[in-house]
Image 1 (spheres, rainbow, N blue to C red):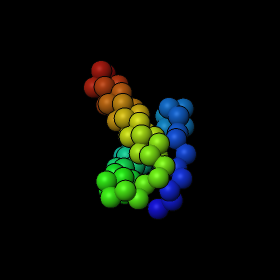
Image 2 (cartoon, rainbow, N blue to C red):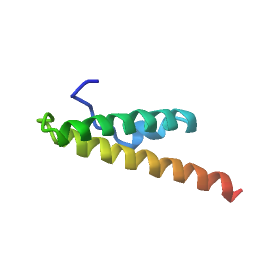
Image 3 (cartoon, rainbow, N blue to C red):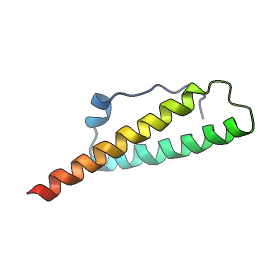
Image 4 (tube, rainbow, N blue to C red):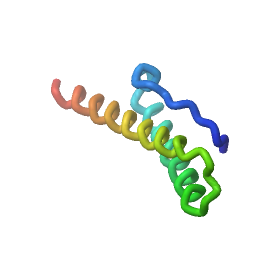
Length: 74
């Protein structure tokens, strides 16, 4: 895994469909676990990456909930 990850914006995530968002969420959760374990053992020097991944996870979860609410309103 690359130690450098670009923080994505809502516009970049909203272009994806539901399945792509789910896959991206799984990848980010794996990355968050990796960064968190590196942080706990003292090997993660760039701690801002952990915060960025955590925020990306929150963005995707929000978009998934938003898309689910649109489906159920009809």
